Length: 465
Image (cartoon, rainbow, N blue to C red; front, side, top):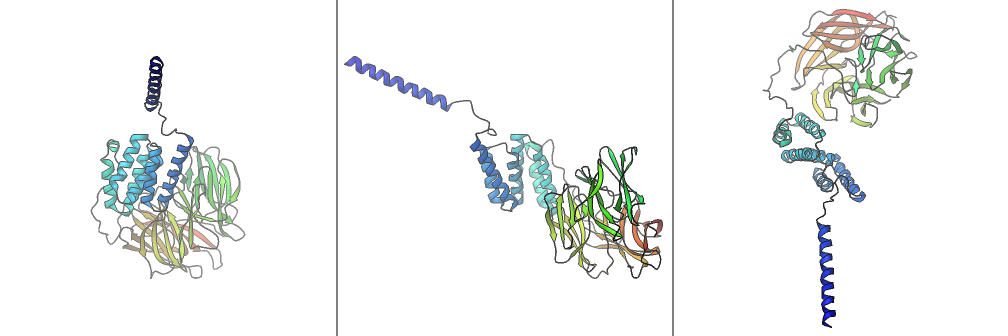
């Protein structure tokens, strides 16, 4: 009996020992899965958490967004988008230290350089809103380990500038190129002679000679000018021309109406008939197109370079006139019945950066050009019924809103509407419609005049009829 009892005790001890060894082995396993390659349920859970965080971020609920981005990183510590979302949310709440820590940790965990680009983008955006916040963010980021060797590019501190009574800039030509949308030096007005290039092709906007009085031809060739072919001879000289990828967008000339029609596109490599868009492209930043739809000039739309992701950019009770763009800003007039109420500058995300009161101005305003933070625009005194050789170029300081100068000019010919085509060197290039004969036909003229004012010189006329 005692022998059987001893054997039973020994068996129980063996079973207990084996169980303990098995449990220990399971608890100390080195086969830990990578947190970016977890089982399907965990991976889906991280994706769901990230989507919730991004949803709250887009709606401006930054506290909830931070909660879900942190939960995402608990599931998957290499989710770059979660670190980006944390940095954006914290910076919007004014916690620059937490934003910097999110970017630093993200770089440590992932090594993804898009986090550096995000840091620079946050700084640039803050700089347009609050310089003090932008400086605080840059200081916090540059103090972290990951940004020691490659700090943010920050704007130099400048003393306030008192506007002078008249501009004395030494301008350089505006450069209008970009990674997504490329365009000639000017959008609209005097398109003849402009060129825009791809990596291997040159698109030339040629002199008149198209399908009508105000039509021009567009050619494509190799960069050295060889193998030159005509893409179209029905582009409007008073429209705009843009290149996005292999698609050339331009305003077509409506021969039946004898005026600019809508917008269309042609593939620069395959050619073919123009593809009509059904709306009117007006200007473009490096990344977005801006346009009106038929029947309304109070709503300006924005879309990506491939015309996807359309959204309302601005919608006003008044009308919008002559939108013009630089790489990332939009300039336009707001008003009614061709009379301006304000010159307004927007960031391409829709943020209103500057409003300059222009009530009291007479009609006849037109598209202008920004150069060195000064906006120049031409105001004609004449119209179709009563052409006049007189006009004025106005200059406004965009930082202060102060009108710097009114430059009167006397054209060699009676003129009507027009606009500034470009500013190059010390010269303003001005295009206007001019009186041809007492009939309804008219020509177009290109003039130059010194930026500081002086004698107006006629360069050429075209579209004689």
